[in-house]
Image (cartoon, rainbow, N blue to C red; front, top):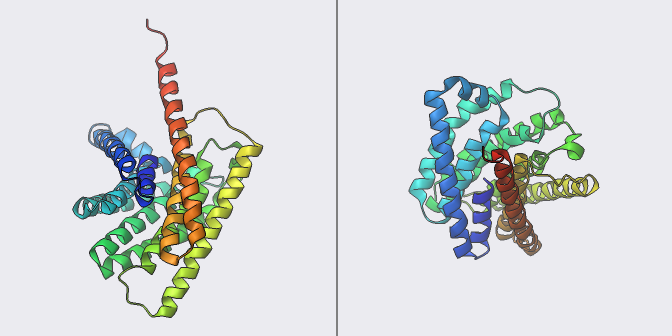
Length: 296
């Protein structure tokens, strides 16, 4: 997820060579995780069922849709459509299982139900733009509305203490809104032949979502400064992804709604996202080496 969204951001800002490098890494990681997913599904069904009820399982959908969106930007519409089919097939299997295990005091990962749903909307919207398919844009907007409803359902269950104690996934609370901006931005420029007033309303919705997302971003950033958590945790990858999503959302809104300041913000956020990716990768490598221990 984090690697693919950085690839998207680099592509949108004209750094095509760097974007291609991140795309290769994202594809390799997706293929590896897909093999592990299939292995557990076919050979270790008990473990698969146990993990399917956790919010982390929804990263399989979100990662697939983000990778598909990047490939759509590359012009690989057939592959992107195939990934949309895979993600859409996983959604009705995994999401109900996760929702059934909801409890009060959800961590930030609880917002992955929104991210996975909005991911479907973003990929469908990207394909609708590329192929000029009105029905696909309508499907994207349906997923967009459903994602917002899920956000409203998760928010009251979110444990706000995570802002002080969370290990990284608390950032998903803000990143979940960024996907919504991408959908509405796509719809503004999309194949739907609406009246100008409808486009105006959609533009306002897009800007409101952008403001809410940036407000969340500011709150989360202040909390990180107030209560530093410098040690590596695998959930720090859930910090990298919302950073990237917010940067990409700003870039998309800037183009769709003609807001130059949003492009400036998007470009400014892209580089901290890249720095966070490097730090998370370094932390993962150190953690893996420490876990190996000394040779016998």
